[in-house]
Image (tube, rainbow, N blue to C red):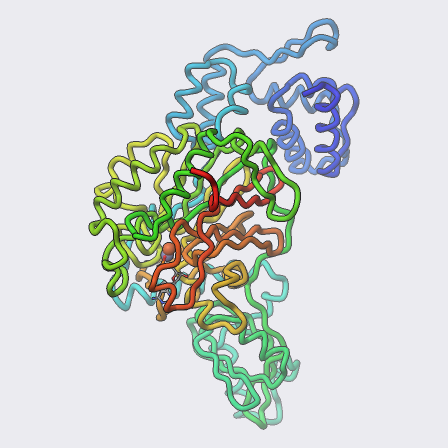
Length: 560
Ligand code: D5M
Ligand code: FE
Ligand code: ZN
């Protein structure tokens, strides 16, 4: 990389943040080489915290920053020569420990550093930088029976309310109990209707208990832990809006109470939704591969295509190009791949549905697992693999699912480059937040929301973001465990939502979040045929983390 391109990168980075940089400071920071973007971020966040009026980065900002981080700066020839970032070994070590504590990197990353002591900045560029933001596996602690479900829904309501409270108009929300008291008071004293009621608009928020289509109206009933409230609409636009909501998701209703008709008439409806935003991007061009649903052990597992994929990962297929989801090609993806996300259904399992054994090549899940392990161990060791379970894998079936238990996958746990996680989980990869969820609930969503189909799973995934919940519908096909805490709520907005389960590749985006359904490596099974599901197997999705651009890499019709 030339110096001038470094300088222009720094300038455009700083200006993209709404700041400017003094030429001397630019010269100084450029000498810091590898880590200047992080340093600029830290300087700007310090400036914002101190509410500084100046929007210009000057040399003092940089010197102050570098000193703060316990390194000393020594400059030679009046700043004209190289700026040396030096420190004692102990200082560097402490900084290193802090860095890895902050990033929660794995031991092997950390020990790799030790072999290269003193070259911290250089090293940061080379190692992968990831953090498990949350892993449902770590929190699984089932409640008991009915009390478990009561606390699960209490948790869902409370977490949803917290998300809702970020909306300005949510301040007007009243408890249903309070609203009912207001109604009773105004019934007793007809002449003096309370101010709240005469204001016309009331706000309530709760989980949707019921949606009821009548001839020309739509009723919706919500529960906010203090009571139930039913509201009605005759308006076509609102009726359509209600049809797109799932039961058991949180909704805020603005309504008016019509005393004569004894009805609450809906004026507006709001789901939690995600805010429109610009997603995070990694600083350098790093790729993450998204795949799912291998179904190893099934007669329909496409082993040949998957071996092609493994060969490609191992660089044995030079010249194969990734096809951009839209237009231009990228012929150099392999050298930039650092991560592989596998979104569940690693094996086909046994007894998952009636007569499944007729579709199995390997009729016990242990031999399926052994096969799976021998396949996954062919992934190059410098690529970090994140693996979550699906409904065909070993372990608990109900959501949230713990990581595939160690007793069934000892060897996978011993592979240095594999991290076993629960379903769902969120990983911060080079600054990009990827939410991984196998996607079991998509069946219920596709079945209950008009206009959705198995051929466009990303449309169904949008509903997950809108409802801020990965499995909003309770009591249908998706088993949900009576956990004390609802871990399926989407508390943190992801940059990428990765699912599988549907076996159909689909990529879309919603309010800045990239939605990826990463298809399958299993051809159409007789069961899927009877269900009318046409999979699109044998394709991997690669994501350029520096711009969230998706690439489709098709391993069908490749020569062996
Ligand atoms: O799911 C593979 C595909 O089959 C996916 O599109 C969902 C669909 N599927 C799975 N189970 C059912 C049931 N019980 N009814 C209808 N459709 C279903 P996989 O999890 O890989 O079997
Ligand atoms: Fe599957
Ligand atoms: Zn599945």
